[in-house]
Image (cartoon, rainbow, N blue to C red; front, side, top):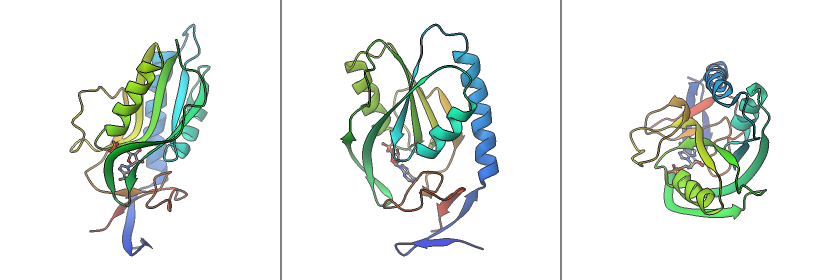
Length: 180
Ligand code: IMP
């Protein structure tokens, strides 16, 4: 089986790019139905770095006007969550009074999404929706509804399609999984 080795760990192909695209097609159709005809212009908040490819693929499929903003957060070290969120760069614009759609690459413990939701409330966002490419339901136990989930995966470390292992692997087109 063809795989790749990064920092001594082996990753094997898990989800082909075409399947990820189908997941995003489905998600975008739902979002288009929910946001079409709105009077305001919602903010699409890309959580860097991991969501960069997902946000690009999603945006190409969205048919309503939106404003792209970014924030850079970090919580993972190697293959596990540190539990504390570091804000590397702040939100790139003013969200007060705006509807915000958070775009995440993956929701694991949910600490990141909770932190961001609270920050957006403090900054006066009028409505907050959460959109994620991947969710690990076995680990996610927050009391916070995830509005748009493209795909659920088991509690295993994944890599590629924007997700990294110590900053490497983000450029892989398909999703890889740690071979344990
Ligand atoms: P949470 O705060 O535990 O929900 O973790 C969310 C963040 O951790 C994501 O935005 C990713 O940056 C990172 N993360 C969680 N699981 C993985 C994984 O399997 N591979 C790569 N990064 C991950």
